[in-house]
Image 1 (cartoon, helix red, strand yellow):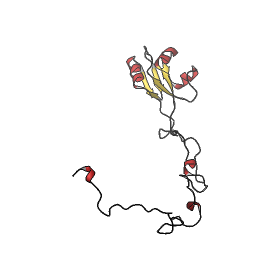
Image 2 (cartoon, rainbow, N blue to C red):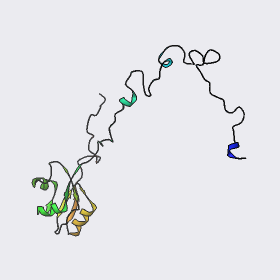
Image 3 (tube, rainbow, N blue to C red):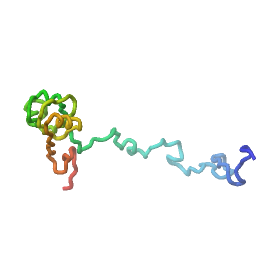
Image 4 (cartoon, one colour):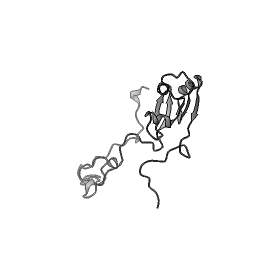
Length: 162
């Protein structure tokens, strides 16, 4: 037996009904579409919802999302800390020098090098910056964030039940 000899069993395949070919058989006159109405006439485009605003227009099409709990740090590098000449570096001292926005959270990053012992107080440190400060004989202190759970309160429109 070869592949061209294969065929379905008798009665397994029925030919489709050809409607709208006169009154001689099933599907004459209205061809199974019933009486008048939109579906008895032409085609309806895909997604048409009878004139109401369709789903593909109701759904917002924003790319990604904005995390309401994002904590934004202002980066300060080691070479910037070395240029300040301070022995104790904290957010207030950086703000006084004009290197930091008021109320910003500080993250110390490892670009550059530091060659003297400095006490650095910041909200976050990269591993390389922390290692470089400790290797130079300095100390690292993590300033806790001012939130109870470690996350800022959600921004934007918050619906509250009143």
